[in-house]
Length: 310
Image 1 (tube, helix red, strand yellow):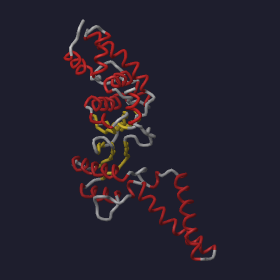
Image 2: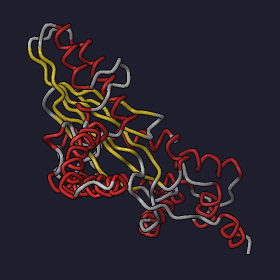
Image 3: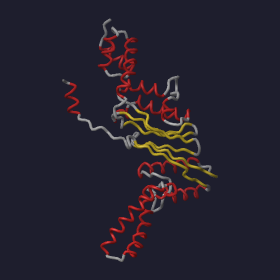
Image 4: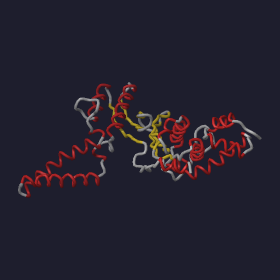
């Protein structure tokens, strides 16, 4: 059965697969559209296996609220072009919905969860998306909160996804609380805090920082030619101030509030609570930045093109 360029275009629009793959599918199926779709699905599952080892460090970090459940997810692909693909973005939102609905314990459990709107799992839907997008796709991580008032924020089209969880008592103006949550989420996106407050800092990390700062302070004091005991006392005093600075950098509540006038985030939250006549506290937060910590492969595009035209 013969087929036309219009058939190739129609198959591409129906499946989202590249033009050349659609042409090959129609050739292999004798121009039969349904058989061509089956051919692409079968080939797509194989392609998903082949592409699974390729580095996926781009994609989207996303945050949303479903009812009373807040979710943040990171779903990766190989190129930044994918972040603008509507089908990929819909898949990311579906993954977030699956997290909200199924409360999975980890990523493996999430992949085995039912994908919204059908009877397929997230894993099966991911394999289909590999066929549609033509790249390796990885569901990397997620966070889920089902207590408190959750406020999501997505920065720069999915470069960063933030979810802030607030506890409120005796506050009726929830819109004002959400506005506060959004301001805090923007702070988190910009300033990259690791912990909520100083009490949450890992003791080993804190001790390591103390040792580093003490060594630096002692080295600085050598030039002053002070007695050893006096040098140690001064160094220890210097370390206290530097640890406070360390907390300002990594602890959300200790950070200077970027939209305020010489106040901390913690003080800003207290000020807003007072204005609202109740008590608002930041309970938790999650910040995902796409590709964070993933070693990206350095592509030699000239060599790749040369290989293609051989």
